[in-house]
Length: 235
Image (tube, rainbow, N blue to C red; front, side, top):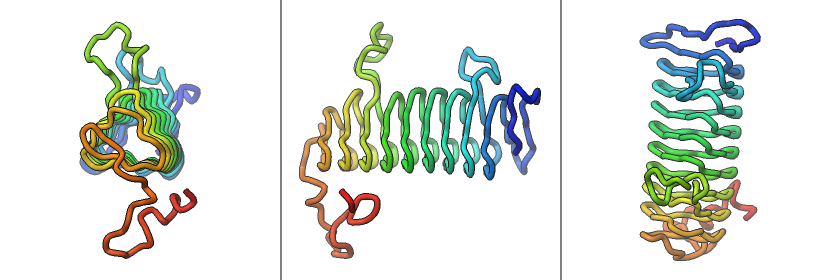
């Protein structure tokens, strides 16, 4: 679909495709080669904002699957992939080749690097994720130590920070303000309440260090060791 913007004087666009609509609001910059599966909404205004008031930029080659909503006020790089029913709110910055899985929710204020996989059913708010990070299905990042209505909420823990090459297993919960170190591995079902040192494996509730990543073994013996492949082998 063509780009829209206030300088062009064009109204928001809605296009009938098969059984649903693709809606693109004013002030959206959508790069070439986008594949938008209906129904989707691109550029929905956040509460209290008029349609077209905030810009939305999405790079080339995006694939946005059905029932996804992307709000105005974000910047998204090239090669975005969404699952079905994904939600990307305002004030998000995503790098290139980011995948946001089915029914995943990116609330406001996330900063996501390049080549990040956010799997099905995840929830993120005020989270910083560096490059080449894997976030498994149903991982929840929390950002408020004492919900709700704390008058100093904005000055408190905030979201987590996940350093490059880290991996977070399915159904983990990450508490406010923690840092998951570079090349760390969080075991499935963990509750991370404290910082995770770089290069370590943590698991449990609360999550504790159980070994180092370079101590992992491939039980079937199919590879020399886990993560002896790009982009991890240089680590």
